Image (cartoon, rainbow, N blue to C red; front, side):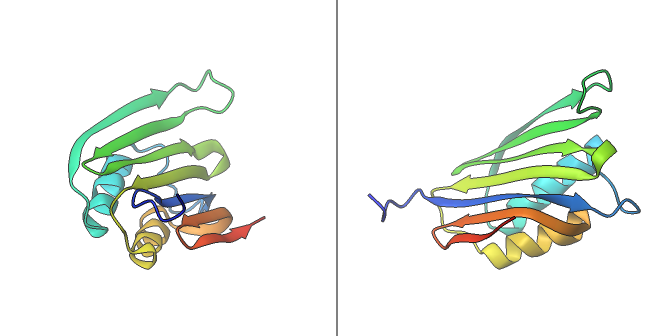
Length: 126
């Protein structure tokens, strides 16, 4: 089962630059997700989003899922903490370096809390 073709994943969370914090900007986040899908060669079916209200302890922020033909890309943002959680799942192989480059540049990542990729395995877990 370890050689199953659908086990291509990235799970990442981290902190972004307060100066470049786009985590509460819905159109910017949706553009970021669509750009990530395009950069890693995935085709979008639909993007769904939910604005998390400020009244929620972790709010305000966004939860977005970009449904792609091979699975999904999702993000949860916590602008108050300059923090995000993101995952990419696909049955199609993807270039992790390209994905990480887009994530770092698009979100202005300054510190990773956790990175996991499959099939390569754990990169770092702090």
